[in-house]
Structures are given as structure tokens and as C-alpha cells.
Amino acid sequence: MKPRVVIVIPARFGSQRLPGKPLRQVAGRPLIEWVWRRAQKIQPQDRLLVATDHAEIARVVEQAGGESVLTPEHLANGTERVAWVARQLDAELVVNVQGDEPLVDVSAVSRLIRFMQEETTWPVGTLAAPLKSESEWTSSSVTKVLLNRQKQALLFSRRPLPFFRSTPFKPLKSVARHVGVYVYRREVLLQFPLWPVSELEEAEQLEQLRFLHQGVPMYVQADANPSPGIDTEDDLRQLNSRLTKQGTIL
Image 1 (cartoon, rainbow, N blue to C red):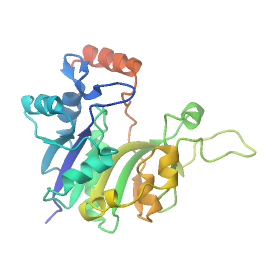
Image 2: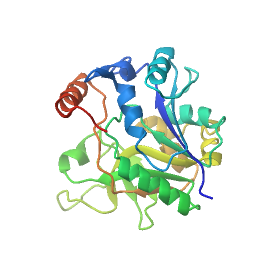
Image 3: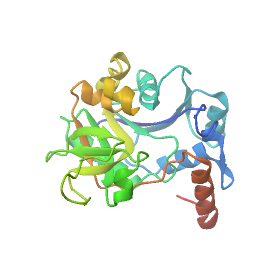
Image 4: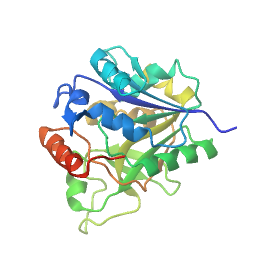
């Protein structure tokens, strides 16, 4: 029997750059509803829910026909929110789809889930996309991941890695653009909130570094199409224009 899969979308109300981001209207719908509708297309899945610290976000999801779980406000990041919900879940695999990724690559997420079902030695899997341009490489908004020949993550950083000492930038197979989707084995995910925040995690503000600091192997599937996250008013305007023109993302 295949491992049971539950997808959790963490949605925090108090975004620093876009307060109330999950409830912001995009082409006539709240952003979180677009993300939830997109996540419905991911297969395999046995259950899909939104984990949020705000009653209005929960109401919007349930009004659209989805399932929500209210979580404490004090949770530090999306992984801790997903881990809090995972305590109550009957699932071997828990999938974390970011609450501000309405254009997430459904096919890539589905492939990663199937890989994690088959290759049971990996505790955590995540997505990445080819890093193609120098502007991506230098941007602190783009998280880079270095990986070895086994496709295991060596390091995540906002800095331009690796350093090209004597040649100009060129795309490499061993560095990719991280895409914030994760598939965890439940027993590993439940350990995450118990571990202290590492120095690198605090410096970079990248929660996935906590797994690496604890020596947890993380598989990187670097074949995703990068989807634009929604972090600024300009991001919101561009997404609204795109969805208004095409009418749907499903």
C-alpha cells in the first residue's frame, strides 16, 4: 500500500511586506483560494487542508469548499505551522505547499510525492528549478541550493553561490533555484519544532537550514518551473493582471 499523503498549505495573516496577504483579492478571489484550488490538482493526495492563524482565512477556505485548521499565532514559520498540524494527521508523507504560490508547478510536486513514496530512505524532499541567469544568481530574493551528485542538498543561501573565481557566471547542474515545496516523512517533521534555530538559519532566515544543521538528508528534485511568489504590491498587481487575462489557473 502506498504511503498516505496529506497536503498542508500554511497561511499566516501577518506578512511583514504584505499584511493580510492570504486575503488580498486577486482576479476576484482571495489569494489563498487560488493556492488551494491549484493544490487540488496535485496527485497523489489523500487530504488537503489550509493551516492558518486567522479565523477569516479559515472562513474563506471553508466557504470555497476546503478544509482549514486554526493554529497558534506564535509559530515562527511555515514549517512549524505544518508540523503543528501534522501531530493530528494520519499520514506517512506531509506536503508543504507555500500559501503564496498560486502558480506552483503541479506536475513537479506530483513527481516529488511519487518519488518519496518509492524511495523511502529520504526523510525530506524539496523542489528546485534550473538557475539560468546571472540576475537570478545575484538576487537575494532567489534562494540558491547547492547539491551533490546524489541530488542531496548541501547548502541553501540567498548569496550568489558558488563564487566564480576566474570565470564569469554560467549555469551549473550542481546549483539550482530553490522552490519552496517540501515533502516530509511525518516522524522527521515532528522533530523540527524541537530543534533549536541554527546560526545559519537565523542569519539567512531560511528555515530549511535547520534540517541540514541536524544532519537530515534532503533530496532535491531540480526540474520544476519556478513560480512567482507574492511578496510585494507589484507582485500582486502582476499576478492580478495575468489571472484576469487568462481567467483561471486551473
